[in-house]
Image 1 (cartoon, helix red, strand yellow):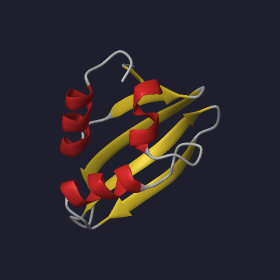
Image 2: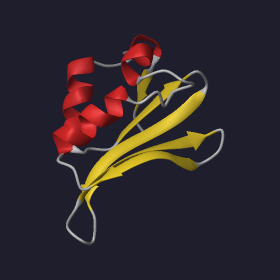
Image 3: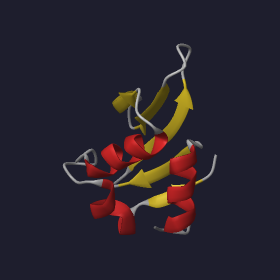
Length: 92
């Protein structure tokens, strides 16, 4: 991970903290939180070049949500682990 420690990044994802990162010219935002009905929700948004929710999972634990996220080919057909070394962690 460019500009960050991957272990710290994973810890923040597991804990549901907001993280912003860039891969292949696209800016992404991930976070987990408990929604209004008390269920945990984890989502991936693309912020740039256009804003949209790319993926979400609801009702699983934070660990199950993170595991599912890491297995999905959400980044130009690649999983997070396949793009991790080229992804840049940014703070905003």
